[in-house]
Amino acid sequence: MNYLDKLKEQVFLIYPLDDSAWDDLANSWELVEYKRKQLLTREGEVEKYLYWVASGVQRAYYLHGDKEATLVFSYEPSFSGVIDSFFTRTPSKYYLETLTTSILLRIHYSDLEQLMRKHRCIEAWILKALTFVLQGTLQRQVELMSFTAEEKFITLLKRSPHVLNLIPHKYLASYIGVDPATFSKLLGSVKL
Image (tube, rainbow, N blue to C red; front, side, top):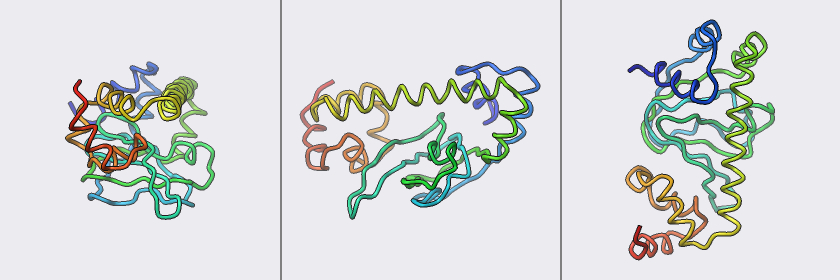
C-alpha cells in the first residue's frame, strides 16, 4: 500500500469524501523527507503545512526559559503540525521537530483552504478531525491536572505501549510531566 492509500484510509475513517474531493485532496500533498532532529516549525513562525506521517517520529514542544515541555508526539500513521498556528494563521508558540528520520506528506495551508471552499466534504472532514483533536486535548488536560505520576505513566503505556521503544525516555518524562529520574523509577516499578 502506498502512502496516499494509507492517508486515504485514515481520512475516510474520520469522514468519507466523494471521489472528486479525494482526487483533488490526494493531488495536493507533497512527499518530503527530513533528517533526525530537524526543526520543521519554530516559535514565532506561522505554520505553513499540515503533515501526515508516513514514517518517523516527531514532537511538538514549548520552551519556557531553559525548560522544554513536550506537548505531543506524532508517528505513523497520524497527522502532525502546529495545528493552532496552521488554522488561525498566527505565530506558533511551539516548536515541531523530528526525533528520527521522517517521511511526511504535507499540504500547504492555501491549498487546503481552497479545497475546503471547493468541496464541502473536505471542510466537514477537517471539522470532524479538529473535534477529535479537541476531545483528545481535553482528556490530556484531565490526565495532567488530576492523575498521579504513576497513573499518567500507566495511561501512556496503555494508550501507546510502543512509544517506549520509539521515543527517548527524557521526552516521555516531559510529556507526562515528571523528571527523567521519576520516569526511570516508574519504568522499573510499575507492572502493567
